[in-house]
Length: 215
Image 1: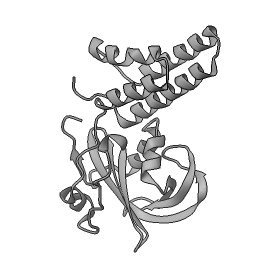
Image 2 (image 1 turned 90 degrees about the vertical axis):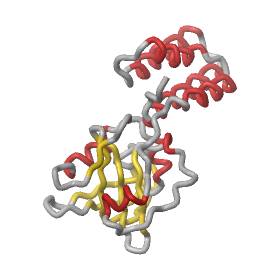
Image 3 (image 1 turned 120 degrees about the vertical axis):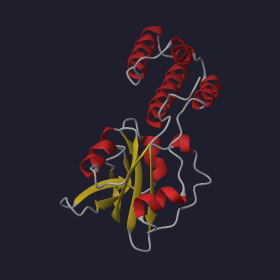
Image 4 (image 1 turned 45 degrees about the vertical axis):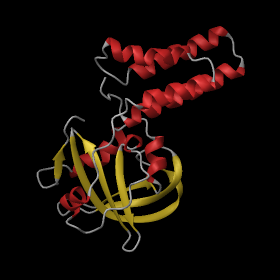
């Protein structure tokens, strides 16, 4: 079976699995446990459309986990089916940003853990973003100014944030609060809606994009 789970979908499943284990360890009543499992079932299956029997068979064991050890083993097995983010390379960066920056080190990044990629150049306070939308990779760049803790507009969590002001020759300046730490942001994400809301105004015929294959 090919990978079919997106990174943010895996985050939802992981959060629910950990929550279920915590409930099991609390010794709650069977009625409460059944109610929680029903809510989990609805939330998880809403993430996907047209699941075949093999994919359902992979997800169904979630509702029969008994302890933390089983949960961790299951999550490791499930991660095999997470779709990795598009291949990041120097050629990709130069396509979007005209060799303005060098490719940062990504050796320690598991591409299954990210829904978007960004790199901050502290020397010039610039931030560069590559994200996927409508089966294409899109690049954005702008000024990034570090701020205090607040709500990130991408992951909707309270984290160390900064103000990202997008550079665009045809649109008024738009600024967004975003996490300083890209990995925390990606791990917090349970939806692509907010990320796409930020990207959408900047996706037109003038915005560089690359079509994804088998994503």
